[in-house]
Length: 160
Image (cartoon, rainbow, N blue to C red):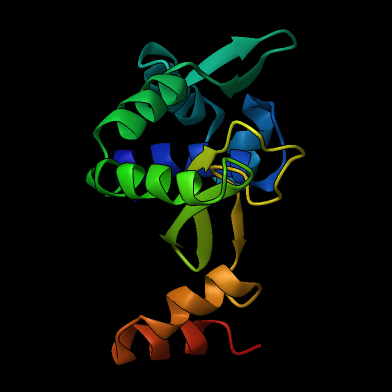
C-alpha cells in the first residue's frame, strides 16, 4: 500500500467517533509497525492535519479548518447556489434555513446553508454531517437525479 493511501487511512480512523488516537492503536488497527505509524504521523503533524495531544495521542489539526475555509470560499457549487439560496430566503421572510446538499461517497452531506435572520432553532442537517443515502427527502432527490449506472452501483453497494 502506498504512503499516501496510508496517510488517508490514518485520517479516516477519526470518522468512527474517536477524537484522539494513540500510536499503538493506529499501528494495530492498520496492521503496520509502530515505527511506520510514527513516520506517517510525523508527516500529518508537520502538515497540520494532526496535532499531538496529552497522553501520546493525536487529534485532527487546524489544516482541516483552513481547507474548510478555502472550500467554502472557492467551491463553484457554493458560489453558484448562494445567491439563489439568498433569494429563496427573501421569499420566506427570512424564517427558514436552506441547505445545499450533495452526494458524498454513499451518503448525502450538507455542504452549505443559509439561515434566515428570523430563523429560530437548529436543523439536523448540519454542514459536514453525512446522512444515509436512503433516508430523507434530500436523499430521494439526489437518488432521482443519478444516472442509471451510478444509481445501480449505489443500490448494489447497499443491498443489505
